[in-house]
Length: 123
Picture 1 (cartoon, rainbow, N blue to C red):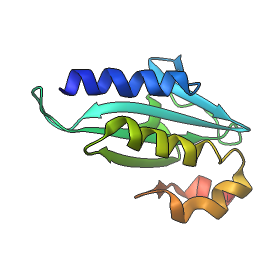
Picture 2 (picture 1 turned 120 degrees about the vertical axis):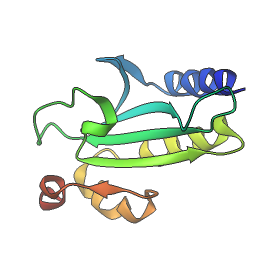
Picture 3 (picture 1 turned 180 degrees about the horizontal axis):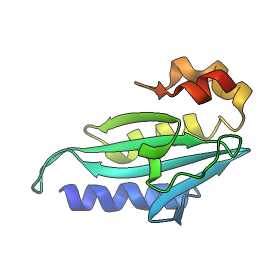
């Protein structure tokens, strides 16, 4: 099941514009770049999936090499139950955040978000 769910989530991400960049999926929304990695929380075919999502702005170089985990904004979103619907909802949310002003306003809507000091100072 996890393999099929992972494939469906990746297809959804790509259909919504995510492109491979340095081994990770990246979505550009306005001036921001959203990195999305689909990860399994455990081993085996029934391990639950989660999205590791990072946001990067060119105002805070260098560009992340390690994907979402290297971004100044990071959040993990569990994909419980309907993985594709959860992914689509999350893409709707981050797809509406394309600049730092909007990011500052929408931070409370981002589940479990962590923001490093450099980005927090910029916001």
